[in-house]
Image: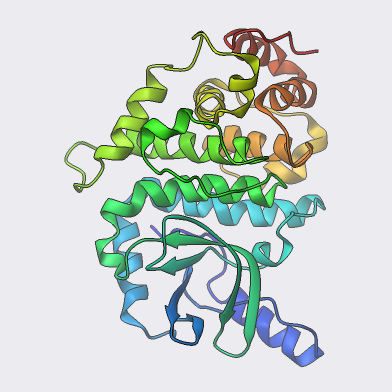
Length: 318
């Protein structure tokens, strides 16, 4: 199974067309499902198309279906923005396939300029992977799943600030300003990724397993927290997103057909989260999100109210 779904040489053709038109280039062309980048003495550089690490990545993803699916959803979200006419907040990143920066701290790499195969390309974001050989991706895969969730909400216009602590216990601490939803979706997708892994999966998942246990046990729901703590905690947002991803029914208003047509039915709940986030300001809280969710999907307003009621000192969804 490949990870980033679309026509194999789309990026190559697009780059050639843009070059012939004499326009600025924002595409890292590749015939592979994702773009691999590494840091060198003179900056970031795209790996040559014949670099064996591409084959190693594709071989790994063929065995790790949950991660392959998340990367597929990432690319389908790019298509959804284009088809629906919604403008992604990170427009240059949305013109590319998933860009994985090898040997970087896990999370998002922001405002990155890469020497591509033909030109230098500057992007708003890429996905950091703390290994240099994709064949050894297993221990870092949960962190990559988290980064995909973060990237989806940055594309949707939410803020991002790297967390000073990567341990699961830190997910309950206040997030950097404006990034609570971004961090929260990362937590939720990492949790679901860990759940989806079959027994006997590769080692190195202890930290992600602890995070999954916390969210699955609804560790933040109904606890004694001040309203300020509720809206600033990425763990709370992650718990809400986890519940939506687990419980949201299928179906959506007809006016959003061009958005949802790009997703498989099993990914519809995640597509709803990204769409609602795009309709919010960049410093939205989980309370803002649930209000907008109930308005955007009236048939699910009761679910939004239920999730909001589980948070202490909160009011009802309108």
